[in-house]
Amino acid sequence: MAGIFDRFSRHYDKQQERKKRQAAVVSEDDVPLPDAPVEQARASDAPERNSPCPCGSGKKYKKCCGKQA
Image 1 (cartoon, rainbow, N blue to C red):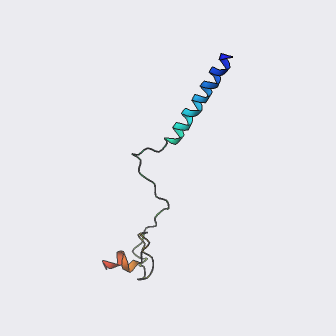
Image 2: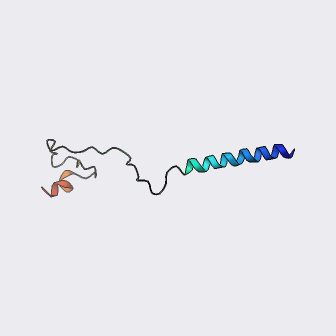
Image 3: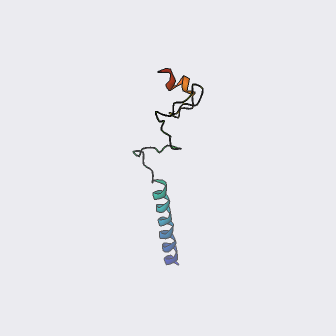
């Protein structure tokens, strides 16, 4: 009877170790990945004043990167 309990205990411990390894795949030192790829603006694709800014900020061009122009 003790042999069965030992086998179960080792199996349970292995499962717990696997779960810990799967949860620790991402470390704090890793660079976070962006949620969506950011499209780069091209010089030939000049945005209009009221179009969304190509930098991906979500603001209008005139309120974001268009202020400098």
